[in-house]
Image 1 (tube, rainbow, N blue to C red):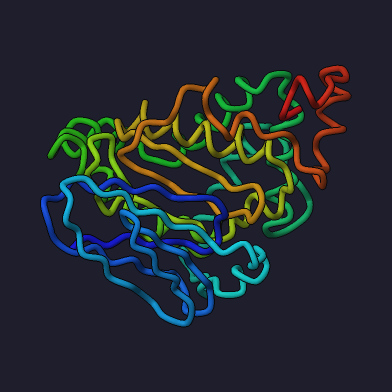
Image 2 (cartoon, rainbow, N blue to C red; image 1 turned 180 degrees about the horizontal axis):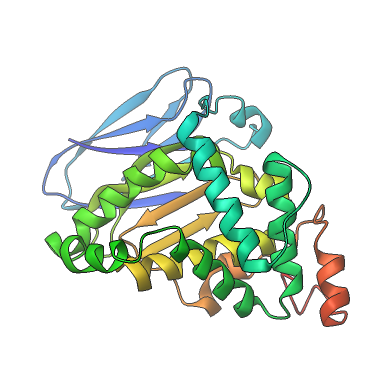
Length: 297
């Protein structure tokens, strides 16, 4: 039986093709209190107060449609975010990451904790005069977090196994285990691959702390999304597509799925958030650019 998790945190429609002769697909809501509308080949069910519903597949190709009900707001859905308690390893990861980030920019904030990290990130973003320079800086930071021998070994020994599926699944679980201190609570889930099959190589970030604290779509895109996709592809040979939601601050990682071209990536077409504190500073460094022409200043 195939299973697809439908998040009531994201608005819009999720289309999941299944290439199966026959069988049953189970639709699972991420929380009992969130309403999820699901449709499989015309058969409709509404999940409220229940975890799942099952559909019988009779066609060879089926499409599952899931969407949050319009009556719900992100704040209501986010009330069901699972709790995550940081441990000693999280503190260690945080200190190493902030140190590497400060070394890259040549400056560190006097502010302690996560707020100080965001100040360093903002400095990285505003000091570079191009988005590409910011992305390259972040890739260097990510690379510096690993021993020099580890990434080449991963590319040679792990990435080729089963056409990259083992590496994608492994990376998803490692992301969940080691990165919640940065992003907040997240869940490993299934993603749809280019051939229509599914595998457990996705990571759903329920409400990204990095985006919420920076309040900047540009920082999200150019110091996280694009550099992380580039790092995974070039340094680890693992395709990755990241899909941030700038309305509710959730984000879907899809390991094993190639990122779209830059000129077709919705994340790069999103304008600066109305609450963005970074846009004015960056505009003053580069010269004023109308938001209509430059989505992320």
